[in-house]
Every structure is written in C-alpha cells, then in structure tokens.
Length: 293
View 1 (cartoon, rainbow, N blue to C red):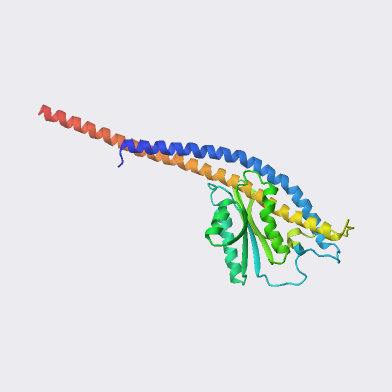
View 2 (cartoon, helix red, strand yellow; view 1 turned 135 degrees about the vertical axis):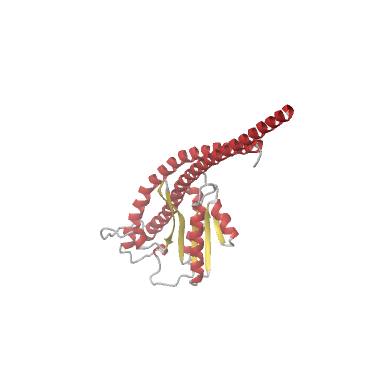
C-alpha cells in the first residue's frame, strides 16, 4: 500500500486537475450559447438562398446551364473532392474521431468503386493533421478559425475545390462536418455538395420562370456560388456549435470522474492512516509489556 505522503500528493494533483476541467466546462458552456446563436442566425439565410437555388434549378433556362447543376447525362464518378470540417483543438470527446472515421470509410469505398483521384480540403487543424498522416491529397486547408466562423477565411480554401469542380477536374464534391442536434447529441454527416441535386435543394412548391438582368449566366453564376458558400459556412457554424457542446459534456464528465477518483483516494488514505496508527499502538503496547515484564 502506498504511503500517506504519496497518496496526499495524488489527491492534490487530481484536485488541481478537477479545477482545470471545471473551468474549461464553464468556458465551453459560455461559448456554446454564442455558437448556437450564430448557427441559428445563419439558418434563415441558408434556407432562403436554398429556395432560390431550387426554384432556379427548375426554371426554364435553355440558353445556359451552370456546371454546379450537374451534367446532362449520367457519367461514372472517377474524381472526388472532400471538404472535411473539424476542430482546431481537442478535449471534445469523440467529435473529430467520429467524422474523420466516417470520411475515411467513404474514401475507402470510393477507391473500391473505381475512384482514381480524391482531393481533400481541410477546415480545422485536427482534420489536417489526420489527413496528412493518412497520406491523403490535401489541396487546401485553413486552421485557427477561432470561436467565430469568418467567410473571408473560408473562401480561399473553398474556392480551390469549387473551381476544380467547375473546370471539370472533379466529378463530385462532398462536405463532411458534425451536425448539431442538441447539447447532448451531435451527429457526423458526410453529404454531397456538388453537383447540386434536387434532393439537396428540395422541390419548389410551384413552377417558376424568371427574367434575368443583365443575363441568365451572370445571375446564375453569382447565385449558385453564394449558395455553395452558404452551405459550407453553415456546416462550419454547425461544427463549432457541436464542438463547444461536446467539450462542455466531456469536461463535465472529466470533472465528475476526478471527484470519484478523489473519493477513492481519500478512502485509501484513511485506510493507510488507520493502519499506521494501529501499528504504532501495537508497538507502544508491546514496548510497555516488555518493560513491565
């Protein structure tokens, strides 16, 4: 059994760790509320531009068809782009592990189905480090986004992947991130981003026809690029809200576990102390008996 001094040192160490995890839990709870507000504030814009894009995709524009809307005939997908959103920091449970595992499984399935080129854009330091270790073809990345997603930081890495699809270098682009469900549940998703499908945009309630000014190509180009940017921005905002929620839950669990460890160490300490006292009493009684005899 370890000595009393060693146990006291362990108890002090765990108490210090509990103070840190408790502080991180409170900080994450504060950031979580702000991240959720930003995420919900971005949803109306994303929904509105989604409706516009859905109506536009069904409109009768015979003179121009944007590359984002897909090819006129089905072709085998041989080149795939993947935009993966993770966190810059750890200590958030299995948040990054789950989405990266799903991305890795999909990449293996694509390779098995005949995909010859997989390009990756990493948003977040954890995903970048993982993809580099796996030997993936990382064509662009952005890290150290902070607690607030800024579109100006995301546009550069996004544009690399979007331009590659628009120029015919990629057949499909996927977006992977962690979707915020509630404080206790976050769900990893990997969904098709390009080409824009009717399933993703939804079916408009009625048929629309538009008059374009100055011309259809200018309007459609600008709107669909903004739509894709909004999808990626919303994914980053969802991931940040999920990050703070997962970190708060993980730090609360760590704080609770530290409390349990302290209780167990206190019991061990009390037993060791009691054993030492009993031994000292036995020695005193034995010494007294020897003197009396």
